[in-house]
Image (cartoon, rainbow, N blue to C red; front, side, top):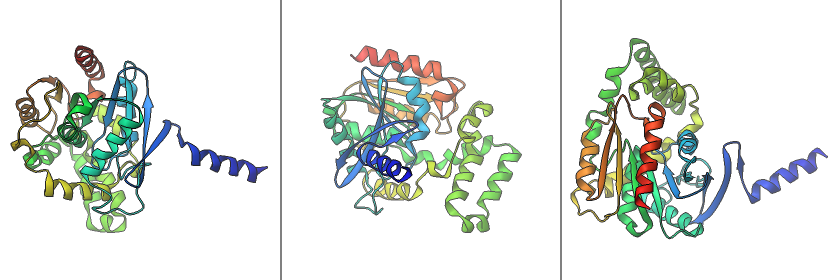
Length: 306
C-alpha cells in the first residue's frame, strides 16, 4: 500500500506541482518549465520579486495583500525556485530569456495585456519588460526599484550599514569572516543578509518579519551572478534612451529606503505618464511597513487605469 501511495504522489507531481503556498502552473519557454502561481481574482497583476535570485515565496505576503482585489500572478523567475534549468550559464540565464518567459505566460493565460509590479531588482526587470513589450503592459508599478541608474549602489550598502546596531555589526563581521565563508559560502551570504536586514527598514522591529523566516533556499546567488553579468553587458545605458512605454506608471518609494530618492525621481522624469508617491516612515520593504497605504495606493491607481 505504501508503494502504491508513493507512486500516486509521483504521478500527481508530474502532472501539476503543488505547494503549501499555492498551486503551481507551468509553461514551456525556451526549453525550460517556467512556473507560476495565481492568487485572487480580477484584474491581472504580475508580481516580480527582487534579488536577482530571490525565491518567489519571499513575496507571498505581497500577493496576500494585493490578491484581495487583484488576480496576482507570482512568477518563479528563470533560475529560481521551480523554474531552475539543469545548467546555469549565459545561455540559460539572461534578461532576454526572462522577458520571453513573461510573454509565454501572458499568452498561455489568454491575456492581451496585463499590469506588472516589480520590487527592487524586479522593478528594473518590470521596467525593461515594459520597454521591450510595451503593448503587453497596461500599467507599470515599481516598489523600491533599483531603476536604470545603477549609481545607487555607490551608497546603498552604506545607507544600510549606517543604521545597524552594534549587535547587527557583530553578526555581520562573524558571517563575513573568511573561515565562515569558506566553510559554507551560500549559508554565510544568507546570514550576512539576515544581519543587514534591520538596515532595510525604518521600523527595526518589522525587519524581524522578514529575517526570522529567512532560509538558505530563499536565494540563488548563482542565478544572480549571471543576471548581473548580463546587465553590465547590455543594460547599463537604458536611462539614456528614449522612453518607449507611454502608459501609466506608479512609482512607490519608502522615504527611508536605503535606495534613496534619486532612483524614484529619475524614473518619474523618464516616464511621461508617471505618478511618484513617497511613503513616509517606510524603508525598502514598503508593503510590510505600510501595508494599508501600499494596498490602497495601488488599488486606486489600477482602478483609475481601467
